[in-house]
Image 1 (cartoon, rainbow, N blue to C red):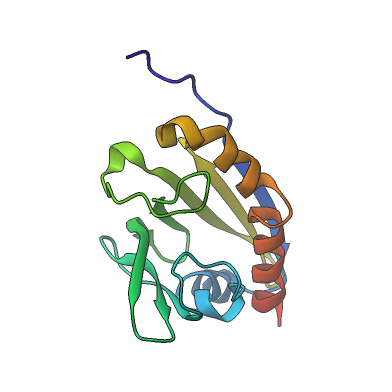
Image 2 (image 1 turned 180 degrees about the vertical axis):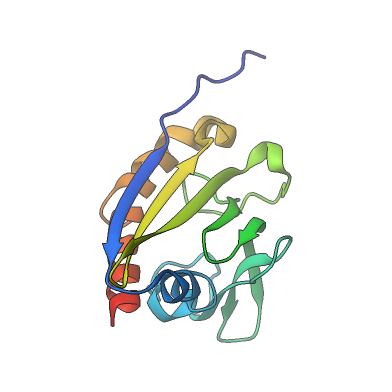
Length: 161
């Protein structure tokens, strides 16, 4: 089997009007406060999205019926500068049941103080080729306005409030 060519990472950067600690906390512990309700995987309505604040923690949704659907794992947790989590959704935004690092892409978010209460937040979604035949479709989705560009704008609004 020939390995798939590397697919360009999706990158997004935003300046939030918040100190670095708040910017980090809103992205991690406050993930549910800005994540849109229609961005879900399970068949039941979304109750909450959780990004557990620790290395090895889960990134998952909780349905209104109490069910849980794990989207990925926190692979690095370095407050208030950096968080990295795996992404186990394919290009159809369906859960990849093989929850191994070899089949997951990775999202890294870096936080840099810009002084005067502002923080530069840089998001990179990389290793998309690990999703095989749906990799290009996934890149198109996460790069679209409904993907990271729109999501990071919702986050920036929440962090700056």
